[in-house]
Image (cartoon, rainbow, N blue to C red; front, side):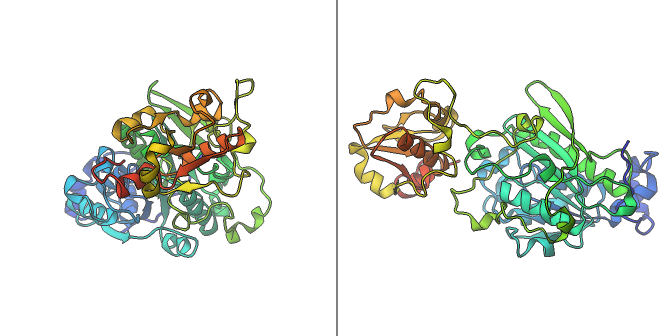
Length: 432
């Protein structure tokens, strides 16, 4: 059994009001007054005030954590409310950090909230994380996940991590460089997933969807792990990964051990070469992904990119559509497409559920997977100019590379996807 010393020393004695508020905690033999005083003295940073950050912030505030930092650069959107329960309809358009701070204040005005309204990058991450006892990663994009992990390793901070992909999820605790006196074996995100997947190989929440109630399941578990680490009770998820299959109502536990990496002795100086700051990426170059595939976790790798299927008739060589493909794929703007719409074959490579939300009249539906495995090529004539589109331009670029590799000559894709079309050509179109 892995026991971790409490992260935080006990704070001042509890007031009479605090004794009443936290009486149910005080009744727990493992937690008690000592643990509650540790919670009151704790400083926890929550990165992301979205689907996972919402329940984490609410439960940690209710638990009596004295200082909560929250990092988020985004504003509340209507589509967030299906799962981001810390925000309400009246918060649409507000900064998420401000909405979250108000929600915490309504729950417990004594909790101090530090709002970091910014997008973390390599120049800011160490400064923001320093001074906190614990970091909770509830982000939804790969660059920030690796950025936060590597900063936690440099700073010696423990990290509670969770991810959701459609109806699957993963939760773990990482501590890449624990104090030698703790007796804790170090483990980090890169021991589970050494590097991020190629851009566009894992659908984002906006493209693949996410079951909102799962955010509550996973976020509550992450908050519980934070309480255990702060107070030193129980056995944290260090060296273990919990994988949730919500459809089967089944949790599976996987063991995780540190892997040898070149340069581990210089962990404090590590600067991730493959996890660039999220705001340095074009909007369609690195989509915000809800999670990492649980199937990939079982194999010790990221979710596998869609590639060629051996033996499939007309299958496209996966090597031709990866990051080593052509340096650039021709694009067309929404305005240019509007003028050429009658002269081209417009192919929508999104999933069926996305087309229910919004679609461009006349577009032929051929999902990306059917283009990559060759099964959909029969409905795309070679003699017509082809314009491919998806939501934002990531999957359509993959599809364009595949068609070019398969011998199509006149292929472009819509820059910015259907989001650009909605902005430039049809403002009444629903977006997601």
